[in-house]
Amino acid sequence: MRVRLAAALVLVLAPWCAAHVRAAGETVSYEAGGEKVRAYVAKPAEPGARPGIVIVHHFWGLDTHTLDVADRFARLGYVAVAPDLYRGRLGADFGLAQEMMLKLDEARAVAIVKGAIAYLRGPGGAGPRPVALVGFGMGGRVALATALQAADVQALVIFYGHVETTPEAVLPIKVPVLGVFGTDDRVVPAAEAKQFEAALKTAGKEATIIIYRGVAHAFFDDTRPDHDPQLSTDAWARTTDYLATTLGPLQPQQPGPAPPPPAGVSSRPVDPPGL
Image 1 (cartoon, rainbow, N blue to C red):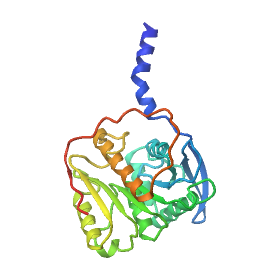
Image 2 (cartoon, rainbow, N blue to C red):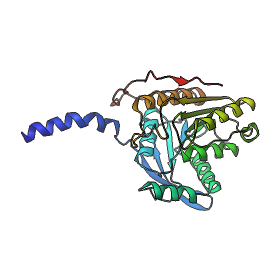
Image 3 (cartoon, rainbow, N blue to C red):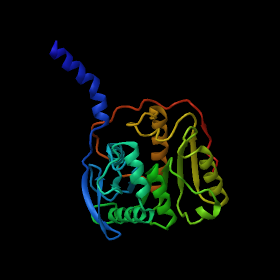
C-alpha cells in the first residue's frame, strides 16, 4: 500500500516539480549607490552573448516567485538578474511587506536597478546586447522610475505597478513599453492604467497596454490567492513575444527537458491595446 501511495504521489507531483525546477542560478553581489547589493542571476545552459533582463521584485521581496520568473527567462535564452531591494528580508506577512515597501527609497531602488543593468553588461553577462526591465507590482513602479531616468535599456515591461498619468510625466521614456493590468485590481485601478495609456499615446510613445478583465492585483503570481493560471499563460506569451520583438532574436538552445505544457489561454476577453 505504501509503495502504491508513493508511486501515486510521484505521478501527481511530477508536473508541479518540473514547473518549479530551479535553473542553474546563483547569488551574486555588486556595488550600487555606495552599498553592496545581493542579486539572483539565472543564465541559459548554452554560453554566449545574450540579451539581458532585470527583474524588479514585488513588495514581498526577492521570493521564490521572483526566482522562478528569472529561471523561466533563462530557460528561454536570456541572462536574468533579480536584485534584492530589501537587503535580504522577505515580507512574511502583508503588514511586514507593506512596511518594507513604504520604507524603500525610490532613488536608492533606481540606483540598485541601474547597478543590475551595469552588472548584466559586465563580463559574463549580456555584454553589449540589449537589456529589458521587467517589474511586478512595486517593482513595476521602480522599473518605470528607472526608465524615466534615462537608464540604458531597450524595453520596459510593467506588471500592475503604479504608473504616471500625464503626457509630461512620461515624456522622458525612450523605450517601447508593455503594461499588464487587471480590471479588478484594487491596488492599481484600471482607470490609472487607462490614463497611463492615454498619456503615452499623447506623448507619442511606443506602447501596448493590456487590461485583463476579471483579474485582481498580482494575478500572475502563482503563490498568491488571486493567481489566474490561464491569463498568466497569456500574459507570459505576450511578454515573451514583446521581448523577442524589442530585444531581437535569441540564440538557439540545445534540446533539454521541456517544461509542462501551459494550462491554455483563456478565451475571456481583454481590453484591446489602444496604442
